[in-house]
Length: 225
Image (cartoon, rainbow, N blue to C red; front, side):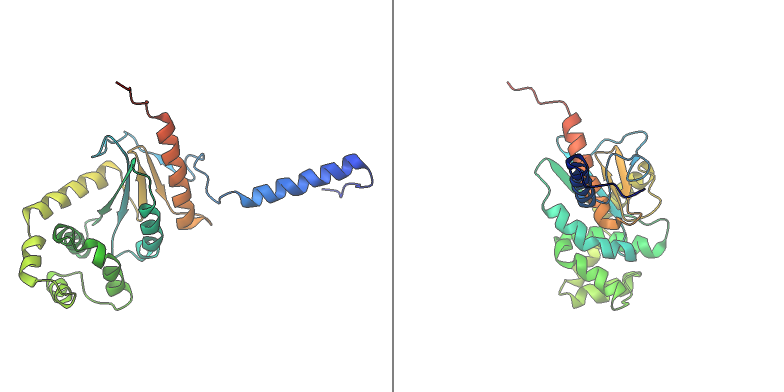
Protein backbone atom coordinates (compact mmCIF):
# COMPACT_ATOMS: atom_id res chain seq x y z
CA UNK A 1 0.00 0.00 0.00
CA UNK A 2 1.38 3.39 -0.97
CA UNK A 3 1.77 6.07 1.68
CA UNK A 4 -1.11 8.64 1.46
CA UNK A 5 -0.56 12.37 1.10
CA UNK A 6 -1.56 13.98 4.43
CA UNK A 7 -1.16 17.61 3.26
CA UNK A 8 -4.92 18.10 2.90
CA UNK A 9 -7.57 18.07 5.65
CA UNK A 10 -9.41 15.15 4.09
CA UNK A 11 -6.24 13.09 4.06
CA UNK A 12 -5.54 14.00 7.67
CA UNK A 13 -9.02 12.80 8.66
CA UNK A 14 -8.40 9.61 6.71
CA UNK A 15 -5.16 9.09 8.61
CA UNK A 16 -6.88 9.68 11.97
CA UNK A 17 -9.58 7.14 11.10
CA UNK A 18 -6.86 4.68 10.10
CA UNK A 19 -5.06 5.08 13.45
CA UNK A 20 -8.29 4.74 15.46
CA UNK A 21 -9.31 1.65 13.51
CA UNK A 22 -5.90 0.09 14.11
CA UNK A 23 -6.09 0.77 17.84
CA UNK A 24 -9.61 -0.67 18.05
CA UNK A 25 -8.55 -3.80 16.19
CA UNK A 26 -5.63 -4.37 18.55
CA UNK A 27 -8.00 -4.20 21.53
CA UNK A 28 -10.26 -6.99 20.26
CA UNK A 29 -10.06 -10.35 22.09
CA UNK A 30 -7.94 -12.97 20.40
CA UNK A 31 -10.82 -15.45 20.18
CA UNK A 32 -14.25 -14.46 18.97
CA UNK A 33 -17.22 -16.71 19.61
CA UNK A 34 -18.84 -15.92 16.29
CA UNK A 35 -16.49 -18.19 14.33
CA UNK A 36 -17.98 -21.66 14.14
CA UNK A 37 -15.45 -24.40 13.47
CA UNK A 38 -12.57 -22.19 14.59
CA UNK A 39 -13.38 -21.04 18.13
CA UNK A 40 -16.21 -23.46 18.82
CA UNK A 41 -18.09 -26.42 17.37
CA UNK A 42 -21.80 -27.19 17.48
CA UNK A 43 -22.76 -30.29 19.49
CA UNK A 44 -24.97 -32.61 17.47
CA UNK A 45 -27.40 -33.58 18.73
CA UNK A 46 -27.68 -30.93 21.47
CA UNK A 47 -27.58 -32.32 25.01
CA UNK A 48 -29.88 -31.58 27.93
CA UNK A 49 -28.20 -30.37 31.10
CA UNK A 50 -28.79 -31.60 34.63
CA UNK A 51 -29.97 -28.12 35.67
CA UNK A 52 -32.54 -27.02 33.06
CA UNK A 53 -33.18 -23.68 34.76
CA UNK A 54 -29.59 -22.53 34.24
CA UNK A 55 -26.96 -22.36 31.48
CA UNK A 56 -24.75 -25.37 32.15
CA UNK A 57 -21.02 -25.21 31.46
CA UNK A 58 -19.07 -28.47 31.66
CA UNK A 59 -15.31 -28.73 31.89
CA UNK A 60 -13.97 -32.08 30.69
CA UNK A 61 -10.51 -32.64 32.17
CA UNK A 62 -8.11 -35.02 33.86
CA UNK A 63 -5.69 -34.42 36.70
CA UNK A 64 -3.21 -36.44 34.64
CA UNK A 65 -3.28 -33.94 31.75
CA UNK A 66 -0.55 -31.24 31.85
CA UNK A 67 -2.68 -28.89 29.74
CA UNK A 68 -5.51 -29.25 32.23
CA UNK A 69 -3.06 -28.40 34.99
CA UNK A 70 -2.12 -25.15 33.19
CA UNK A 71 -5.79 -24.36 32.56
CA UNK A 72 -6.97 -25.04 36.10
CA UNK A 73 -6.03 -21.71 37.78
CA UNK A 74 -7.61 -19.76 34.92
CA UNK A 75 -10.85 -21.72 34.75
CA UNK A 76 -11.17 -21.80 38.56
CA UNK A 77 -11.02 -18.00 38.78
CA UNK A 78 -13.38 -17.70 35.81
CA UNK A 79 -15.91 -20.14 37.26
CA UNK A 80 -15.88 -18.29 40.58
CA UNK A 81 -17.14 -15.14 38.86
CA UNK A 82 -19.94 -16.69 36.80
CA UNK A 83 -23.44 -15.19 37.27
CA UNK A 84 -26.14 -17.10 39.11
CA UNK A 85 -27.88 -18.24 35.93
CA UNK A 86 -24.80 -20.28 34.94
CA UNK A 87 -24.01 -23.68 36.48
CA UNK A 88 -20.40 -24.87 36.21
CA UNK A 89 -19.50 -28.54 36.61
CA UNK A 90 -16.33 -30.54 36.06
CA UNK A 91 -16.27 -33.97 34.45
CA UNK A 92 -13.12 -36.12 34.80
CA UNK A 93 -12.31 -38.21 31.73
CA UNK A 94 -10.57 -41.58 31.53
CA UNK A 95 -10.20 -42.20 27.78
CA UNK A 96 -10.08 -45.88 28.70
CA UNK A 97 -6.83 -45.51 30.68
CA UNK A 98 -6.65 -47.38 33.98
CA UNK A 99 -4.42 -44.66 35.46
CA UNK A 100 -6.89 -41.90 34.61
CA UNK A 101 -9.77 -44.07 35.84
CA UNK A 102 -8.11 -44.08 39.25
CA UNK A 103 -7.90 -40.27 39.11
CA UNK A 104 -11.58 -40.08 38.20
CA UNK A 105 -12.43 -42.29 41.17
CA UNK A 106 -10.26 -40.07 43.38
CA UNK A 107 -12.13 -37.00 42.10
CA UNK A 108 -15.54 -38.36 43.08
CA UNK A 109 -14.32 -39.78 46.39
CA UNK A 110 -13.00 -36.34 47.38
CA UNK A 111 -16.24 -34.76 46.17
CA UNK A 112 -18.29 -37.10 48.36
CA UNK A 113 -16.08 -36.28 51.35
CA UNK A 114 -16.32 -32.53 50.77
CA UNK A 115 -12.55 -32.29 50.25
CA UNK A 116 -12.44 -31.63 46.51
CA UNK A 117 -12.07 -27.85 46.64
CA UNK A 118 -9.31 -28.03 49.25
CA UNK A 119 -7.25 -30.68 47.47
CA UNK A 120 -7.93 -30.01 43.78
CA UNK A 121 -4.79 -28.00 43.06
CA UNK A 122 -2.80 -30.23 45.43
CA UNK A 123 -3.59 -33.25 43.26
CA UNK A 124 -2.28 -31.46 40.15
CA UNK A 125 0.87 -30.48 42.05
CA UNK A 126 1.41 -33.97 43.44
CA UNK A 127 1.27 -35.50 39.96
CA UNK A 128 3.08 -32.90 37.85
CA UNK A 129 5.46 -31.22 40.30
CA UNK A 130 6.35 -34.00 42.72
CA UNK A 131 5.70 -37.06 40.49
CA UNK A 132 3.72 -38.82 43.20
CA UNK A 133 1.92 -41.99 42.17
CA UNK A 134 -1.79 -41.21 42.26
CA UNK A 135 -2.50 -43.60 39.39
CA UNK A 136 -2.99 -46.60 41.70
CA UNK A 137 -5.24 -47.10 44.69
CA UNK A 138 -2.29 -47.88 46.96
CA UNK A 139 -0.50 -44.69 45.98
CA UNK A 140 -3.67 -42.69 46.40
CA UNK A 141 -4.33 -44.13 49.86
CA UNK A 142 -0.83 -43.14 51.02
CA UNK A 143 -1.19 -39.61 49.68
CA UNK A 144 -4.63 -38.88 51.13
CA UNK A 145 -3.45 -39.96 54.58
CA UNK A 146 -0.65 -37.40 54.24
CA UNK A 147 -3.32 -34.78 53.51
CA UNK A 148 -5.03 -35.54 56.82
CA UNK A 149 -7.90 -37.68 55.55
CA UNK A 150 -9.18 -40.73 57.39
CA UNK A 151 -8.00 -43.72 55.34
CA UNK A 152 -11.01 -45.90 56.12
CA UNK A 153 -13.52 -43.17 55.31
CA UNK A 154 -11.69 -42.40 52.09
CA UNK A 155 -11.60 -46.08 51.15
CA UNK A 156 -15.36 -46.30 51.63
CA UNK A 157 -15.89 -43.23 49.42
CA UNK A 158 -13.44 -44.55 46.82
CA UNK A 159 -15.57 -47.67 46.33
CA UNK A 160 -18.93 -46.13 47.16
CA UNK A 161 -21.91 -46.90 44.94
CA UNK A 162 -22.33 -43.15 44.42
CA UNK A 163 -18.78 -42.99 43.04
CA UNK A 164 -19.57 -45.80 40.62
CA UNK A 165 -22.76 -44.03 39.53
CA UNK A 166 -20.99 -40.70 38.99
CA UNK A 167 -18.23 -42.34 36.99
CA UNK A 168 -20.78 -44.08 34.78
CA UNK A 169 -22.58 -40.78 34.24
CA UNK A 170 -19.27 -39.12 33.34
CA UNK A 171 -18.63 -41.77 30.68
CA UNK A 172 -22.10 -41.14 29.25
CA UNK A 173 -21.34 -37.43 28.99
CA UNK A 174 -17.93 -38.04 27.42
CA UNK A 175 -19.54 -40.15 24.71
CA UNK A 176 -22.51 -37.82 24.20
CA UNK A 177 -20.27 -34.76 23.86
CA UNK A 178 -17.76 -36.69 21.70
CA UNK A 179 -14.81 -35.60 23.85
CA UNK A 180 -11.56 -36.28 22.00
CA UNK A 181 -9.13 -34.12 23.97
CA UNK A 182 -8.94 -32.11 27.17
CA UNK A 183 -9.37 -29.55 28.55
CA UNK A 184 -12.67 -28.98 26.79
CA UNK A 185 -15.61 -26.74 27.70
CA UNK A 186 -19.21 -27.36 26.70
CA UNK A 187 -21.79 -24.56 26.91
CA UNK A 188 -25.52 -25.28 27.32
CA UNK A 189 -25.17 -28.68 25.67
CA UNK A 190 -24.91 -26.87 22.33
CA UNK A 191 -21.32 -25.72 21.88
CA UNK A 192 -17.90 -27.13 22.71
CA UNK A 193 -14.60 -25.29 22.89
CA UNK A 194 -11.02 -26.53 22.82
CA UNK A 195 -7.98 -24.29 23.35
CA UNK A 196 -6.18 -23.72 20.07
CA UNK A 197 -4.21 -21.09 18.19
CA UNK A 198 -2.44 -18.09 19.74
CA UNK A 199 -5.38 -17.25 22.02
CA UNK A 200 -5.02 -20.54 23.90
CA UNK A 201 -6.78 -21.05 27.23
CA UNK A 202 -7.62 -17.38 27.76
CA UNK A 203 -9.21 -17.25 24.32
CA UNK A 204 -11.30 -20.32 25.08
CA UNK A 205 -12.71 -18.64 28.20
CA UNK A 206 -13.40 -15.43 26.26
CA UNK A 207 -15.31 -17.43 23.67
CA UNK A 208 -17.18 -19.28 26.43
CA UNK A 209 -18.30 -15.91 27.87
CA UNK A 210 -19.63 -14.87 24.48
CA UNK A 211 -21.43 -18.17 23.94
CA UNK A 212 -23.04 -17.90 27.38
CA UNK A 213 -24.29 -14.44 26.40
CA UNK A 214 -25.52 -15.83 23.08
CA UNK A 215 -27.45 -18.63 24.78
CA UNK A 216 -28.89 -16.20 27.32
CA UNK A 217 -30.27 -13.98 24.55
CA UNK A 218 -31.75 -16.94 22.69
CA UNK A 219 -33.50 -18.46 25.70
CA UNK A 220 -37.24 -17.82 25.91
CA UNK A 221 -38.22 -15.21 28.47
CA UNK A 222 -39.93 -16.50 31.59
CA UNK A 223 -43.62 -15.70 31.71
CA UNK A 224 -44.51 -13.54 34.69
CA UNK A 225 -47.61 -14.57 36.63
